[in-house]
View (cartoon, rainbow, N blue to C red):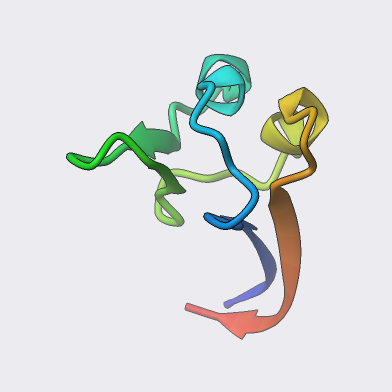
Length: 66
């Protein structure tokens, strides 16, 4: 179980792709509707996507997640 995860707030995100370029694990994926989402199975929680997002659209959600 993981104590936190990163998620993209679609209300803030402008789909620039900077988070996807910064992710070393390739966990930030573009959907068919051109929005981005974080594949939690691939995400290693490094925070590179958070640092790359100038709009602060990527937020840390705390809790226990599978």
